[in-house]
Length: 397
Image (tube, helix red, strand yellow):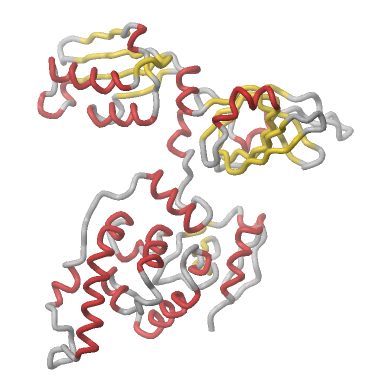
């Protein structure tokens, strides 16, 4: 009845095994939307929802064993979809579908249909499991009402476990997907930087061929071209060269495509500390065609993380203070004190700070002194945006 659970591994090897159909290759995958796993719709393997949509298979979720999934799918087929988190916990054997399994299902997005968001599902899990354990204990002890229902009131069963909290930030959601699915499914960590990266990179990785040296007509490609690219570093390998030095080979991914990056000793000595898996890197170097691999390669000459790139390529960090958009009339000494407190932590960087203030009747713009140059980290930008309205903090390039 169920598809072979082991074939779900083929997804990471360039094929997509589909329930009841022949596997699809990489070219066919290009035009498909792959939806997150769904506890009320998914089977072991990837399955077809419509000609352009595939639903992720439950068997490909890391940390969820075959025995647990067998029980979940059999219960769903016998008694219908699960209604909420408590209903899911109550209807499954918690010795097999234990806390570790449930946490993996939540992180992968498989239980999205059972709650308002993944963070709330995780926050509600303890209560739902305790209530389900009590239900199982009462059932074993025969403590049911005369009509065969649960002793607890229906409204208690369906609401007592629910804990509503704000959903995870995108970074946390994507990290959990990578941990449980082996890939980023509902987005990419580079998405939130996309508009900013366009300010100081030459193109996306998918567009490399359009700016790289063209074929001369006899299969020989001209000398490499200088480019500035950005991507998430997804792999890293270090090898010794014939002369006893080190050559680092890494792969960058920007969601549109991937490119191999080569770093030799002199560059590695200066920038090697930035080479960390799943870190966003901006790379300047020579892009050329690699006949051996049949793909483009960038030989790195300079490497930046996002903070360093902002410092190097931006004109300033601009803070706009608009009195009409500030809740509670936050202004005057209090405003200055809070802004000073935030900026103080990130001083001694290389990025100038400009403050623009609109009182409604007057507008002023002031560039802070060099002693207030900052490190424009994500944390600083987030803290400033927490003090001000959306869109009031930006990097100027």
